[in-house]
Length: 211
Image (tube, rainbow, N blue to C red; front, top):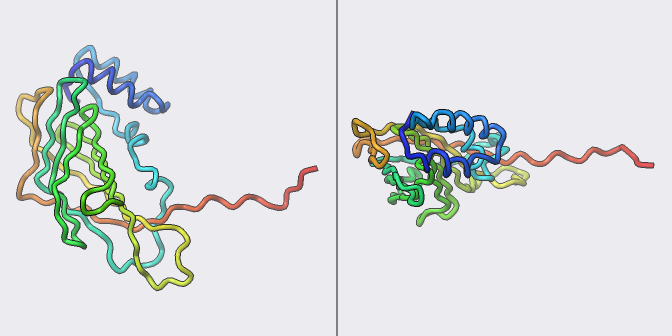
């Protein structure tokens, strides 16, 4: 549960989650809870909208990839906003453990909950999604990746590397609508990548004739 302003709880959240039936159930629960200025964050509902299209309908690759990216996340912080028209912010240091490239990542925190990054200065194909729930963060990575295997025949579909990690933050006590929650500067969370391939569309059925 997370305290928040009326405009953020109802107006902004409703506009984001209304399009799905599952989300409507969460929104109804949210509307009922708002009288007490509490908010239950609908992680599953928002994830349906926030997930990159390239990560849907994926399956693990059967061939071995010589190198697979892993990502290290540290110095994470999030600042919530109590103004409905002004998003909060989230930021952290990201290191690709294969290329050994490090860079600061920052993004607006929409609805005090969702942060989306499509492309970074060092990797235009990397997509990052953050779902923040007070002192807990779920982070996902999705990167186009060439395995450069000797598989014959060559794979027809492109490969991606995906990974999911969880972070814990420390928030002030008591909590506030415009508080800042932070992770440890020394603790590093490593997110392991998995190589996946999009599932091809099913072949059209044959043998049926129309008269």
